[in-house]
Length: 505
Image (cartoon, rainbow, N blue to C red; front, side, top):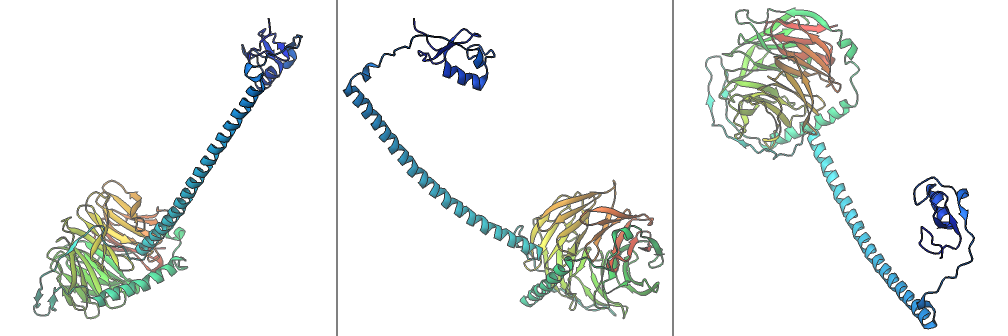
């Protein structure tokens, strides 16, 4: 009886037996198995080469296969082997050719994809730069401009001519806006590289306290100051609008009233001080916008752009045009020199009252808030709504653009302030305030470093970190206006308690 290897089932040349399983193995096979596994292949018990026992047998003679015993059979075997090798070689060449074609096609596709990606990247970069430089591409939400009926009314004795004729955005005006935006964009990029040395540092700002309060600016019979602005060229001059229908210009340094301007028939809800002229603007629920001469103390122009309460007012960077919003669902763009309405637009699809309006620092786009909690971004040249920012709950009460032109702050009757990135068109930060907190005023300082929130109290946040650095609760009524002095050297506020307050070191 011949021995058979338990692994190969063939007669072993060098047989050995495992004392663990008592099985016969070819020595070279069992040694390889032990080297890899260290165990007997039959029962898995530990086994080493030293334990193997050689078996001495006479050298076995293996019978040759019948097909290999004759020369013709050997030649046929060699011929079959050669044919198989040739067929395999041919198959390999075919596979190589196919692989080369597939690789070539893949390389062409990769090159084309790289070109498309490069082009799309370039277009995305151009689009972002266009938005950042106030050149948004119109057409996201189409609105229709409506032509107002020509309406010219002669004012009574002592009243200026009231003009409300819409003359349209002529090419000269559009070019003027574009040229101003180009200059402002260049200047803003230069300023954005460095923070002004005169700007108050955060650690000093956090030490601010109330240094002055004035309560005699407006009538005590109808209490409440509803709006506030500072003269950009001389921040000692403070402009307020009150519930007593009056507009007051106050000198902070001299602590005296420069002018009290009377003419509105209802409370004054928005005021703006012209940056280079002794002129101020005011808006009221009496549906009028008035242009006042501070030195003359009289109204020089009445703009009737709306049929309902004027809710928002913003002066264009050129100093020649006013943006206004109203409960009649329209925003209007008017020439302050002639009092003419250049264009008047509404979003007929929304059909909702506008609650506030504010120009972007470069003047080619602006934002409006609505009573149904929407913030709409408009392209002035095209007069189209180019972006919408949903997310608030309740009417939007205030909006403010940062000086760098990238951020928009908005407040609504949901006790929160939301920050929006105009480059990415999305909300990147929400500041949740106390329950029932009323946000009435939002303003960035001239450098865009600080954001002030006026409402139930006054809070100042440092931008980028959006952490609170100040909180004033001196007003006994709701804060309706807040503003920074030059380089944030002081902070001023007005409220329903009929007081004007100043804060500094």
